[in-house]
Image 1 (cartoon, rainbow over the protein chains, first blue to last red):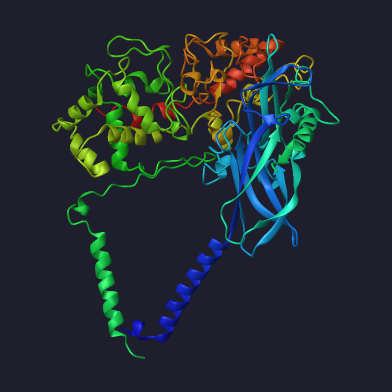
Image 2 (cartoon, chains in turn yellow, red):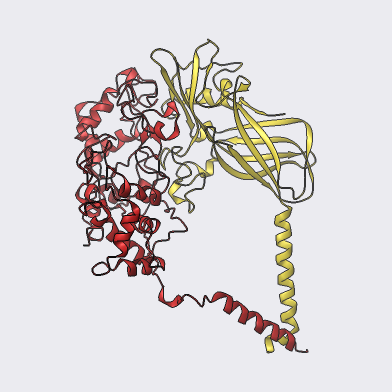
Length: 254
Length: 368
């Protein structure tokens, strides 16, 4: 009886309820951006597994195209770059590969740029055992990273670009980038700013990876017959050439 | 400070209401009280992803063990899961293909049941995504135990004298109604606790023992890129095992599907392509763990290799070219080209993954 009689108690209960409502409101006010990923070949629609010609007219068949993306930033026209802590594993062979960004709610924003890390941030890479994640399905956890990890002392594989030239006999190639030296950031700007609405959850943008450009750049071309393989540690120069091309192969779909 | 007697009454009614809602008057709740099973995750192992609808319980694990070894789940009452998954060979089959109750012979080697709670798909082609799903198949398969599930559950339901299955199902799942789903759930619980973590390699990883020079050299071979750098770009004279048999979480499998160059054509067994329908998956099979590999011969999906020496020699020569051979294979450059002493070291390392504490664990043996 004494408890219920106390006005302090009632005030406390009221404050608790108010605080729960407020917290809940804040959560709802976060804006979400869904980033859909797609792959193209020299600007044309393409799916992993299909064959398409390279610069020399040889058919290239990609069989595995996967990557980690992380360390996102969006560019607010007024406030500048805003960091968003997300790591996602993108497998271009699966339906609807995507990443989700949660932007804390502080009113509508005018957005005109996106930065994206290509790989796993240094502080979560080497010497981090996927087994240490309590959720094995986390993108960096044991199950979530299956096939994209070299061992706890060597870290994660940032990107995998595998396939074969359909020569006779065929010529398999493998470009695996990892190691902090191959972490890259790509920066993409929209021609016109767009409105990120306070509390809205269904913003969607689309990023395109041009797999052709991962072999063909303005200043460098990788020929899989000459340079068929890097796992970074065994051929760092080729890994760096490849990630430099890969970094320039991204675009925002208008 | 007026009381709020009304408020007190409201509160009382609320509490009473909640109590009533929480009580299921039709089910004597106190009778079913399963004991949660405490699964100890060994050092450096990842958490196990256990389905929310099939938590481990002492009663469920025990029932699963009985069912795993239950011969009445086969048409002729002579075969259990343990018939093809023998403890002494790491719960695998020492024959290339298992023989079913009708005399029919399968077309793939029975995989070792070891740390399968960490797998992300099951069977060589990954056609089952959960253990529960996988376990449903062999009982009814005509080339294996050949017993329709209706008959299987009927046998269990009417066997009250010795095994007391209806009571055991109640203890594990709160119902005496036996179903195929509950049988598979119980067996899945049992198989999930079949954990190997006491090999010499585990002990070394925990700092309890040292590896011999040969074992350590073999481990380094395991971790290095394959090939002579003069021939293979980036070659490190290693054995290149780690790409597919990755040591993350100490499970020695990437859980993916690879064509490791066994055949040039795949009409006999298309492997993963049978499930996905994609020609890119022809000849691809799930990477098995290397734990207890020295005990679980024969090797490969069809059991074609009888010894570790044969397996090493296969990789040493680079495999057979095909339209889907894995880029990791070194067929075009003549293989790994390992020296005899390197092969010996590699095999010495593979033996460090042997865990007889696991194979002899009394908790996994036939309870009948």
